[in-house]
Length: 112
Image: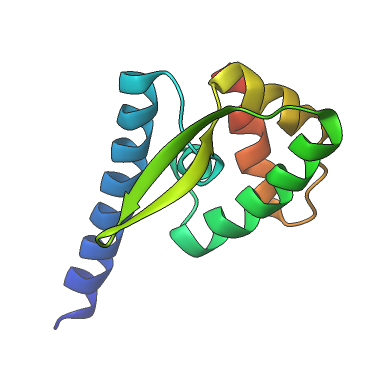
């Protein structure tokens, strides 16, 4: 595959993933922390990392979110869904070190 085509497809995949995550949050009013992170533009692996950190901060703050079921690859998993306002409160106490995670934090704060 031509390098330019590979790059273009990667950009399109990332933009599609971000848009779908943001649309899911808009549609239902809430999303998992990983979904919020993907809507902020992070790749799935980085989104899971940020979600774990946000989950830890949410526990400290006593923010529980609402229970739900996430369906992934044919499996049903129990999850917690948070509104944009709840994620903004969690993000206010979240102190990331990496630049990409700081940008995601800014997105969380502005999305509320």
